[in-house]
Image 1 (cartoon, rainbow, N blue to C red):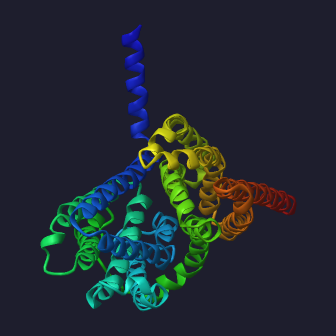
Image 2: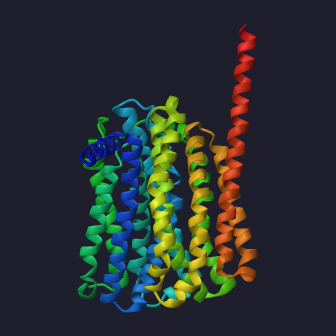
Image 3: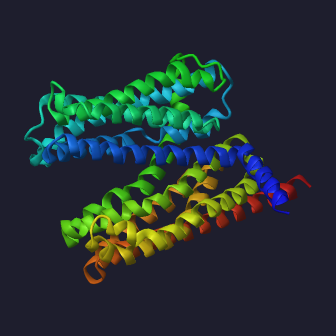
Length: 442
C-alpha cells in the first residue's frame, strides 16, 4: 500500500512538473529566493570586510539603484508578456524584445543620472566617503538592473523562467565571490560594491542577448528596424502596465518611511525586520500570477481553467509557508533580539493573514492583464496604494506597529473587493454585448 501511494505521489509530482503554469511559477519563485538568499550572504560578508559606514552608504546606493530600476523599466517586462505570444518568429519577435530593452535602457540611464544628482542633495549624509566614481556608476547600474528585469520577463513570457533563474544565480554568485576583495580593491569600498552590482547586471544582460534569447527558440536577432511602429504599438501597454506596477509596488517601499516618520527609527527597525520575514510568503502569489499571465497570453481560451489551477498551486505552496511563519516566526525574530520578537509577533500574524487577500488580488490582476483590461487593473492597484498609505498613517499612533499591519491588510482587502467588482461588472457588460449581438443577427 505504501509503495502504491509513493508511486501515485511520484506520478502526481511528475504531472505537475510537466505543467508549464506551475513550472514557470516555481522557477520565478526560485529566482526570487536565490536572489534574496545570496543577497543576505553578500551583505553579511560585506559587513565583515568593510567598516559599517561604508556598508551603510553602499546599501543605501544599491537600494536607490534597484528602486529607480523598478520604476524606470516602464512596465516593459509585462508588455513583453502581453505582446510576444502573438509575434511571428524571427524579425517581429526580435524587434519587440530589442525595442523593449532599448527603451528600458534609455529611460533607466536618464533615471539613474537624475538619481545620481539628487541623492547627494536630498541625503547629505551620503556625500562623505563616496567619490565621483560611485555616482557615475549609478546610471549604469540602474540601466543594467532595469534591462535585466525586462529580459527576465522575456523568459517568463515564453514560459521558460528557468533561464531567468540561471542568469540571476550566476550574477548572485559573482557578487558574492567579488565582495570579499573589497578591502584590497584599489577603490573605496562603497565604489567597489556598486561596481560589483552594476558589472554583474551588465554581464548577465550581455549573456542574455548572446545565449538566453536565442535559446528561447524564436530565431532571435537584435534589430531596431521598424522600431517607431513597434513603439507606437507598445505605448498603450506601457502606460497600462506601468500604472499597475506603480500602484502595486510603491506601498512596500513607502511603509518603512511612514513608520519611521510616525514612530521613529527604532520602531521601524522592528517593522522592517518583520516585514522582510513576511515577504518570504508574499512572493509566492505574485510568482504564480506572473506565470498565469504568461499562460493566458498563449492560451486565453483556457484562462478559467488556469485561474483555478493557479489558485490550487498558491494554496499548496503558500499554505505550509504561512503555517511555518506563524509557528516559527517569533523564534526567527528573536535571533535579531528579544525586542524584535516581542514587538513584531502580532504584526507578523496580521501580515500572514493578509496574504490571503493578496493571493486573491494577484489572481484578479493576472486575469485583467490577460483580458487587456489594464485600466481596471490600475484602478484596483491604486486603491490599494492610497488606502494602505492613508490607513497606516492614521493607525500607527494609536495602534503602534500593528497599525502598519492593519493598514497593509485593509489595502489588500479593498483592492481585492474593487478588482472583484470590476471583474463582475466587466463580465456583465460582455455578456450583455453578446446577447445584443445575437439579437441583432437574428
